[in-house]
Amino acid sequence: MMRRRSSATDIIRAMHEQYEPDAAPGVAVVTLRGELDAHDAPELRELFGRAVAELGDAATPVLVLDLTGVAFLDSTVLGTMIGAVRRLREGGGDMRLVLPETSARRIFEITGLEQVLSVYGTRADALAG
Image 1: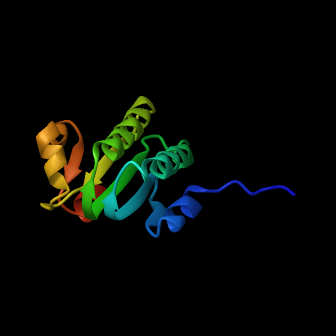
Image 2 (image 1 turned 120 degrees about the horizontal axis):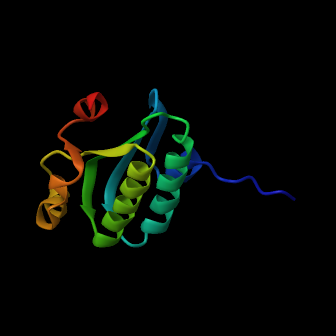
């Protein structure tokens, strides 16, 4: 019996979250919610990898990561996100984070990452770039 390979959409649905591969030409949106920790990192790594691969044909691929509904994320998840940013930038693209003034934003402030990542207060701003 041949097993079907999971798509990024299947992975994110399994996490009860939202993945929009065609939000705009060359743009995909991943919306995450809740508390994210080391337990979630492997699925997120796979999701980000597949999303980046699916954007591969775009001249300037953009992955919008909407963290509006995230209450907490740990350093493992942060590292997973940084890995995806690196892969996108190596391919001429970028990751845009939607991160309003919430408790999850604190880790980005503490680490100084909000200064080096593309951080937006709203999804509309992130999509507009």
